[in-house]
Amino acid sequence: SDCENAGKTWTVDSHTNWNGCVTDRDQDFDTTNDAPVSDATRFPAEQYGSCPAPLMGLTYDWQSLNDAVDTMQPAGNTNQAIGLQWGWQTLTNAPFTIPAMDPSYKYKQVVILLTDGLNTQDRWYKSQSSIDARQKVACANAKAKDIILYTVQVDTGGDPMSTMLKDCATDPDNGFFLLKSADDIVTTFESIGTALSDLRVSS
Image 1 (cartoon, one colour):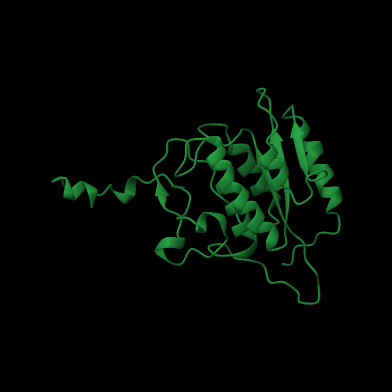
Image 2 (cartoon, one colour):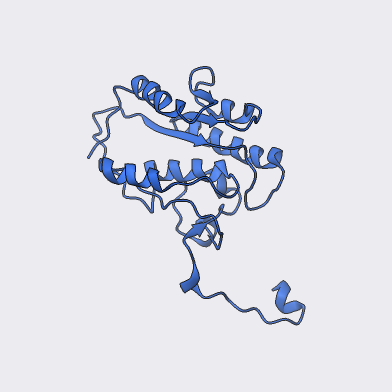
């Protein structure tokens, strides 16, 4: 409407050129796991040159998971909150197929949020403090729904420890990991796996 009110013609981009990126949802749905069923709850398309690897839902297909990890490359800016939100979606909501849960079993629903950088971008803000504030709300909302959060900050460039990321963890003292080497990721995930050794995924 701003374009048209200025006497210009709005030309819609061809959808055939979309490269698969999405961006943060409208506030306050950017901090929840509501199913994307209406305009306000949908993830807007974004034509971004550094799209991450496509998401995968819950699966036992370890080869496909390994292949997906291998395609990931560090590029572009960092938006931790949208990663958290999509991880939460894979556990609980559309557009993913959620495995049926046995009502006689008490499940643990876990998100491990790993980042190789501090927050540098979201749909609205450019300052890290403002972006962190939105993510803080998302973390609190997930934990209020009994999602167990582990957070991993991989810092190979001298960034300060992210207090927000530490506080995001369900247990900040034992569920937050500050790594100085990418090689530490394997042992960190093994440590988390040990802590969750009684975790089961219903199929």
